[in-house]
Image 1: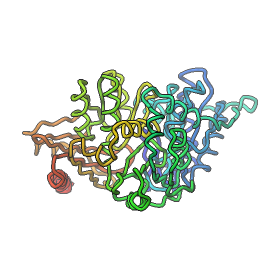
Image 2: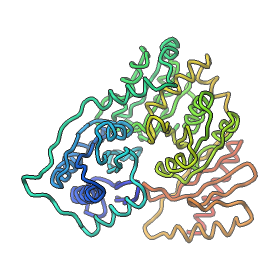
Image 3: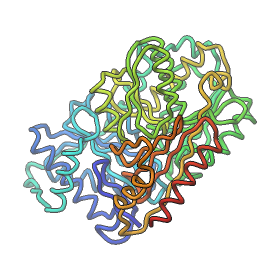
Image 4: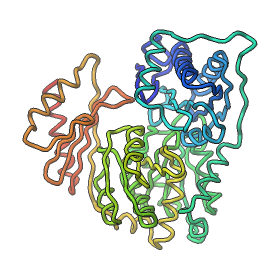
Length: 459
């Protein structure tokens, strides 16, 4: 199994031996290291905590709360929540930071500690490195009994989040209500089953069907919202004669849509469509990571803005957005970041803006999709065995394609005329991701297959 320690947080599988998996001892150690970091940064002793619907969530939560209390921190427990809700609650609560217990799109045996700063944003690389150092050195001190922290519950955080979305100036509740959408949701047995229907009702949507609605962490299918995992949603949209389908991941920071005919809108085009709407109302720049579709650049330029790519990873997208003062940004995996709401991927604001755009367009969702370029991205991965030298692999690939334009800021991005391929290691899994984009699906697939063959030959 696996324990992955990175600036993205601490992610691992439940059970097994310490230092190789996310065991109780590992949870305590990394929680204590994070708390110690916050103590060094200031006197605030409040931390917000929330979790997705995973089977291990309650166990991990209890360990985290006890550890933070033992360090002298007061914990605001949101219990079942979403990643963007916790991010916003850190600010609402004026807390020193926050922890989200979620392994995002990973299967049920995984869990993770995602770590936030006082702005409700993911801690930066330097802070992440310091957490790992403190944990390795076990450089933490617990408080005496009369200084133990206390834990309180907060049941209002999701409603505050929904209120902020509904009242956002570009969200048109009247238009959404008038459109009388019929929507099917795949909540994948996690907290989307709580958050998404509540948001839709607040937006005036009356006809709502929820698939996999029991929050038990026993995911009915692979929880990553990819086309091959959403066949049930597609079938139900057609069966119910619904306007569209909505799929989110277990912690509700990724978002994708299904068209009325059961076809995929395309997770890459979630950001494209939302950006098209936002940029039509608010002139400015956009940002996505360099593994995302070039359609965002097309839309941004069409509206008179400038597009900027970033390294992969939400914290990198956010940093680039701040640097170029972007008005919209995100990732091609369906992650929408609306900076004047908060700097975090948020499926709830994504849904509200998308439905506003769809309602005002007077089009069906399929017709709306057809207004955007028909690019294809082939998404693939190679699982790595222990000890593989990825840097050596990339150097050899770089040498083989030295006559092509190459960006080595984040792995390798190689351009072929109007097509591209991006190779990079994952921050959350022991894999190399291989993404390729072209105007033609077969061309994108062939580019990806060629690079995968190159990698296997090098290995």
